[in-house]
Image 1 (cartoon, rainbow, N blue to C red):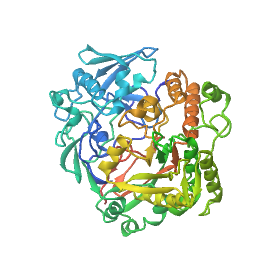
Image 2 (image 1 turned 90 degrees about the vertical axis):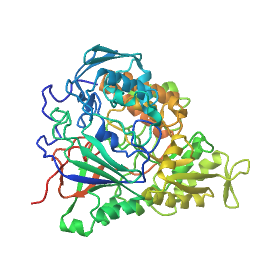
Image 3 (image 1 turned 90 degrees about the horizontal axis):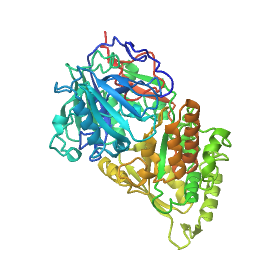
Image 4 (image 1 turned 60 degrees about the horizontal axis):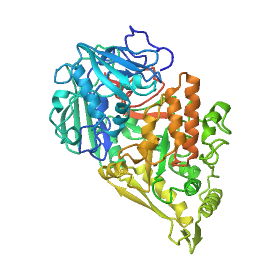
Amino acid sequence: MYGDPALPPDFVSLPYVNADAPKGGKITLGNTGGFDSLNPFVRKGTVPWQLSFFTHESLMGRSWDEPFALYGLLAESVETPDDRSWVEFTLREDARFSDDSPVTVEDVIFSYDTLGTVGHPKYHGLRSQIEKIEQTGPRSVRFTFNTDNRELALLAGMRPILSKAQWDGKDFANAPLAEIPIGSGPYVVRDYQAGRQVVLDRNADYWGVDVPFRKGTNNFDQIVIDFYGDAAVLFEAFKAGEISAVREFNAETWASQYTFPAIERGDVVKSSFAHQKPSGMTGFVMNTRRAPFDDWRVRDALIAAFNFEYINETLTGGALPRISSYYSNSQLAMQPGPAPTEVASLLAPFADELLPGTIDGYALPVADGSVRNRAGIRLALKQLEAAGYSAKDGTMRGADGAPLSFKILMSKGSSQDLAIAELYLQALNRLGIAAEIETVDDAQFVARTNEFDFDMTTFRRALSLSPGNEQKFYWGSEAADQPGSRNLMGVKSPAIDALIDTMLSARDATDFTAAVRALDRVLTAGRYVIPFWQYNEGLIAHDAQMKYPETLPIYGDGPNFMPEVWWWEPKG
């Protein structure tokens, strides 16, 4: 995106990979809930979240040691002009799907047209910015864009490639569970039990084993994904040796609960992985499509009532820092206090619509750590009164006399989030707010959040050091009413839309950073999410026979780290 890639054209492997890692071994991973689809590229159904990482590939691949660099995967070369008005890829001659059919230009064009129209909505935005896709040679395809957006040349290399032959005459968007998409990736689905288990085998004839981008990766012969009713049951299965590795997201649990015999024997190892990626946003999101969340003062009150310091101490031992903005923990984060000149100038045209604190400085309220959080409750009451509410007979009521009430929609398997919500309800009840928790199974949770059928719900949005076009899908105005979009809060803001466009058209890293910091301010001061804590290092407990490279990517852990670059090393 800016400057040159860090690796030379003749690189041998990615810098955080053991190029000589042995192949072999079998691991079992655990998920909560279930699944009713094995097609990760459509909106319908619940899919094992890891699946697309294992079975499908794109023209280019991301190095997780560089925020804005891609390297050849299905494509052996890429060409683009200075203005990036088009990009052309040439496919590798030996690229093959798992059924041994060649990956062709026809497959590429079919994939972009299909995903961009009947695939998951997250793919639609790119296709709408492509003027035409045309074959320019036996193995070459050119994308011409209709928008001045420098990131499109990269995004065009990052869509999964499907087999056209598999889907000709079939309903891709509504395919049955048994119709598993054929990919070119290193793993294939060998077997499954609906809702309970998926078995993936490493393709012994995988075409890309010697491609530099793939060297030393995807080393396990088999990966099994087992499904459990909730996190507690999954953890017990891990302790019993039925699961090979788990990611832990609770520092207190990590410190106190990982003391079982397998760890004491050395059969299970605790490993931590530092990273430099943004915190992203984790918390309770408020649906501004519905009252009372369409009033920013109510949202501000609900944030003030959330006793973070007490909840953090109770559930994590106070070990994890709070998320302070969407890009906290990174160079892209908004800076404390008033906006600096370069950021303020981007915000100035929208000053009249921006919420208090956006330009002058906004920070989350800090409680004293006590259970009662008097200062937070006072601030919440003040904001509720400003919004026209008052407490009568112990119940918070609006000007029309109707009680202030809402539900927090949650998945049954999200035990930690449920614990947070239960502590939060104590504060809301003291305010006279009739809030309650509504739990549903995973399939219902996905369906309802896709349709924005909730008052408040859990929210997790991972963000990268290279934010781009996906930001429109996350909080762009057009996505607010698009079922299946990630804009759960329903924000429609000309400022956000303009800042995303500014970010996408930036010609250097300085202008790009200023645009992201301005966007971070508008989102954070918008008071759409009640933030939890951030995970400033990855925590993985794993079978001692699972090994990983000494060099870590700047992004730390993630599915492109474990299990992708790990390997199996038998004892003795």
